[in-house]
Image (cartoon, rainbow, N blue to C red; front, side, top):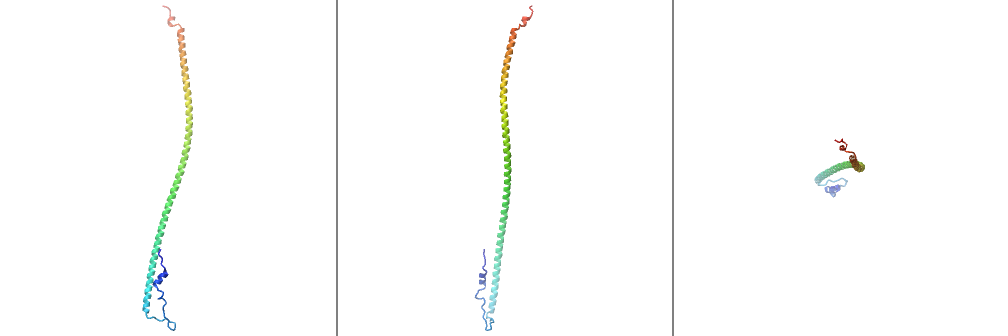
Amino acid sequence: MNSIDVNQLARKIVPRDDVGVHSMDVDGHERESASSNDKAAVALEMVSEAAAAIRELEEQSAQAVARAQDLANSIVNQLEAAEARAERAETAQRDAETAVQELSAALARTRSDLEIARRQLAKKSEELSQTEDRLRLSEADARAAHQRSAEANAKIEQIFEAIRTQLPSREDLSPAN
């Protein structure tokens, strides 16, 4: 930042060797120099230069204040933007945490449902195995019953055959003509 050394500026405007050069008379009163008009002109010039220097300082000060204000406004805008980004990030993080919690709960429910389904499947598999065992036994019983039925039919047939062969036929029973 540009800073003005006031003492240096004052030395430029008011040279030290011009200040305080007065001659005194015998009574201790200042004597008027021959060039009092020149001194007045020099004094006016010095006042004018001092005013110009003050104006320049004021302009530089105003520019510095404006730059500082612009910089402060820029920093405030950057801070506000950073705060907005931070709030959005926090919101996104909360949303993500909520989503993770919901997904975790859904995963737990799914695992529970899967375990229930596994148990039901194991139970149904056991029931199917028992049903298949009963079916095999029933099929074996049916084959044995069919075998017994076939054997019984064969015996009935033998009995019928024995009866036919042992009983007289109708011809044998009819009166002789």
